[in-house]
Picture 1 (cartoon, rainbow, N blue to C red):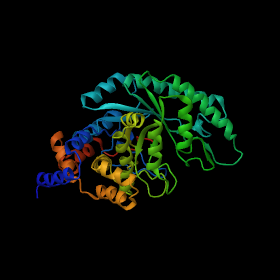
Picture 2 (cartoon, rainbow, N blue to C red; picture 1 turned 30 degrees about the vertical axis):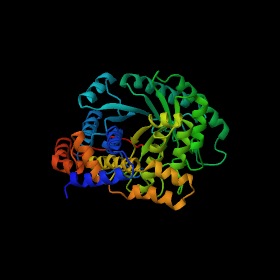
Picture 3 (tube, helix red, strand yellow; picture 1 turned 90 degrees about the vertical axis):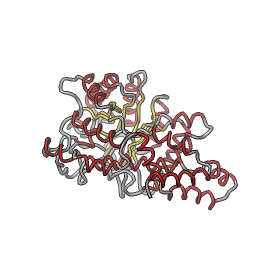
Picture 4 (tube, helix red, strand yellow; picture 1 turned 45 degrees about the vertical axis):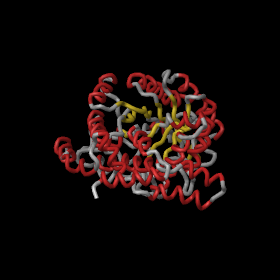
Length: 414
């Protein structure tokens, strides 16, 4: 059966279930997944980075690769930058932005780096030494200026700050240092900018982490104001944490700012999103879709501004194919959330029909949406099978031949 015939069968089935197939396709066409510049370079794990032939050596090569991913998928139109890894030698961000635009992509979230320099051995904003805190603050304020030059609306903040031993530093003092410095950063955001505060419950600090969970990030964002929100990294939780419940809470509070998509088996493994637990990815998207289609004005408005970003460490699997697969896995999870028959599902919930509500949700997850996604790609004028198209394009061989095998160029990203 051709994909178009399979799509027609699926469309008829979904229509019978009360799903507006044209609305689903329209929403899928508007999906936006931001890829990370560092994902195209030889950034790897904490222990060893295995150089990959053709991995990007410069920011412009990263943009070339990101443009290829967008060309094949149609839903990855922006690239997150990491400073200083992506800082132009001449500081000409206008030229960098124009280069990206010439490739039909945009520059996205700006990610400061306050963890790799020796001076940050005992932290950045949480550091007991004022000179170190000032250095970190100066760098992040510089990133606020870069946001204006790149026309970015998101400052993505992750801090490696914490302590390894009880009594090493005052936990309350570190909290106050963070509040003081984040307030200054908040005051220097561009007019259209917002601050996304990431959290991580452990690593590299093993006794205490200064922003260890979503509750602390939420409390900081609440103190700062409307333009401070929480960034959820799927790998930054303890085993068994219900991430979709966190998502639902933050949506309801208007404080969900964005995602760093990846997957994990044990801790912060930075594996391809959807590769270990695709059901979790679906459930997260289901909460987002539910908010987007709800009558709750705050949750609906918040869902419309969520930034969807990839943050992964492709260390042994190459660079381009895993990035394409990551985008496609997000597309599939979103598509399955869109075909949940909301009215029927909500009626079952309201009637206390435990198994009925569960079955309705699971039926959507088990539905093969590949014909739907192929139809959407055909209508977007991109390849219906992006991975096969990439393999056939010769791009992998071309960049390997032209770039060779470079040493580590991307740095370590949490």
